[in-house]
Length: 161
Image 1 (cartoon, rainbow, N blue to C red):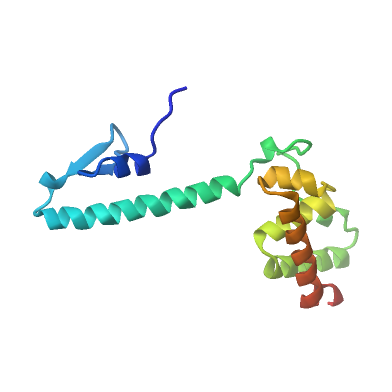
Image 2: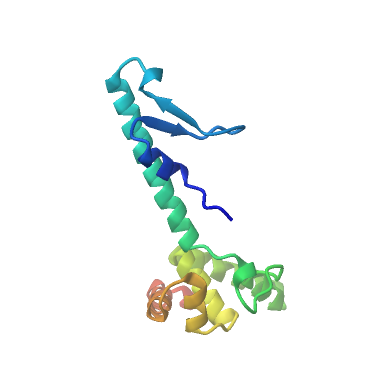
């Protein structure tokens, strides 16, 4: 498989052109000839460089903090969510209402990462080391996240409602 340069790399490498990825063909390189002045080209080149830089950074952050359930050993991607599993275990309408309320409170008080890690640890029973491997972080980072989540739960009074 041949390595393909990202648009960010192409744009950075070509100082005399703005890389413009065409949707239905090859990449277009806009040079200073396409602009009224060199200053206008320089202005749009700097905007382009910054836009590509921030987009590449966002994509890298998303890629390093997102895991496909297909890649997680022991978890079936087609399986129901932990939230749905908890709701299915609730026997009465009153229990289901209480569980829904608890889940809403947890979502309001925890970050998405904390909530996901807490679900993997408490509901799915995954050990900290496996969660760390899934998230590509160290086990102490997961432990800290879980500890902070538990602290938030205690200080928010969720469990006393």
